[in-house]
Length: 167
Image (tube, rainbow, N blue to C red; front, side, top):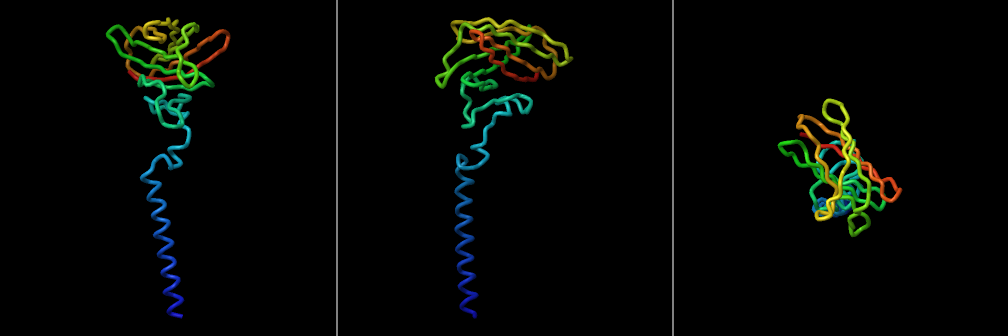
């Protein structure tokens, strides 16, 4: 009877060591953790607001490399970069297509901005061929949360993205 108890204890100990070793590898290898493989499509890459629909890719990489908020919409990649200036906020939109993120120069792009006071402002974004992105200036510098809906028409195809930023 004593030998049976000893055998059960030994097998149990080996089993626990094996399980802890397996879970230890998972903790040190973030690529194998469920959190790393889950899509991060509901959080922006530069803001914690879950209202923004998409940000980083499922691989956790910032596709555009511009440091802005990213939205993947079908085959399209939209990345918004904001910069505060003395006269307002500079908005840069990188509108790209495909895995190689080829710039799309011929789209009609509008940014509809909700200001912190709740009022709306519509901005036509112009293409900067040298920088290969769309740009607009949002006048004013009110402190608070801004919500931006980017509406793009690419040869009749509607491609939209929602972003937010804080001043």
